[in-house]
Image (tube, rainbow, N blue to C red; front, side, top):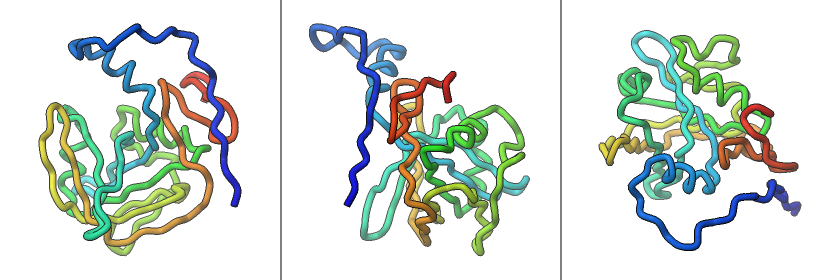
Length: 186
């Protein structure tokens, strides 16, 4: 069994001497930016056609029943279109797919432009380059703070590749076999 070693560039900033109050959104984001997250693209087939968005908050919730979740900013312009569909796909991106991450993060009506994808038997658009795909039925949506928590019941899943996942950390992508890259370097 092989182990992948993550190498990151050491931080040059000195950590503060103690805890600080959580009243500054910029500082809150900076501190939580030190928590690595996998990158997923959530896709669905809305009345107007395929829709998708990048999320950095995807997680497994339950084994029985099989549930997953992600969070969406309540001001998202993409969320109302995703919500139209009762089924959605979760496409986990591999370490070499930062361009796909950016494609589904941009403010564009057609994020699927120049992206290879196919439609599942449930009518869900799934990205051909995803290393893992899950097809889900919307289970529950709750407003929590300034985000919606979207829970889906996994109906089918496919492991398409065993590549390391794309990881976002401190404003850049982590190369699981190398060093951290900033947004400009990706």
